[in-house]
Image 1 (cartoon, rainbow, N blue to C red):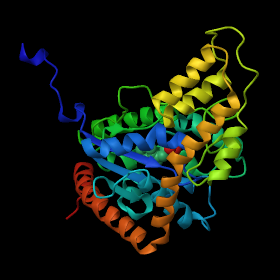
Image 2 (tube, rainbow, N blue to C red):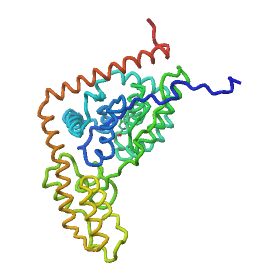
Image 3 (spheres, helix red, strand yellow):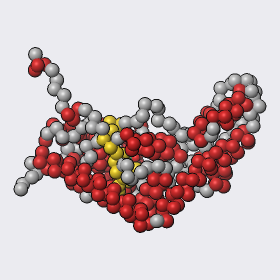
Length: 344
Ligand code: TRP
């Protein structure tokens, strides 16, 4: 009878370890905050967390490294200004963890050319940069897998665009475990129950993102006047003519943004005004702009303070690398043993 029961392996259970990577290309914006960083800040209190700046991944599309250091430092400072705490989470820079290169090499032997070529992000980037379709780009999901399983993490807070990479990571993990021994848990996308908040752009279409039109995205680096200018430019119309009519998308977006940063009273007032057909969009946008400034300005200032203290930033990176290395060394010892690469 007992033989019929499927034995549960320890790698079938979630490890309770969280890992995610942050690409250091572009400035942090409101969409990053509500879509990701805010969740990291909550997770760091509840889980063992590894958050990594993916500087090596950025080389797959940005081979010019002249601005890399300043980009990496800015992203570190911005995430910390948003509440990411290097005392709570292990916050490190990918290139500082040399073990990653080794694990990536082993995993490459388990990744098939065909599946890598079918990856949507690979096909997109290959189309965008036909002059630089390098092997690093092709094996991008392999490197990402190495990042995750280096800490034997199974909980990966990422958005929808990373689902396919995680599916590939699970495949690589299953192959590794099957071939060399069950040492890695399968990684899965992990977010708090509530739906991931999509922060709409200010141009009435799509979401806030760094690659889209910069006038429709609010960055934590934007000064007060820029924030005002962007918000005031958001598309509106003459207002509803019938009570309680549905909101067009571009108006709904303004309400969504208001919900993120304004008080309940303010939101209720404008909702009532809308439903009673006496909404004044000019006033609403002025209010939204000021509430945005209240939200963004302190983070901008904190980022600036951190960036001015280069010594502190270096210390954060060094300590993060040290902590990450403790976990990586343990994993790599296990990997080499299970692969039979432990000659002495
Ligand atoms: N590919 C991720 C992105 O584009 C960044 C990333 C690198 C990552 N390594 C990771 C995400 C490990 C989660 C886990 O945003």
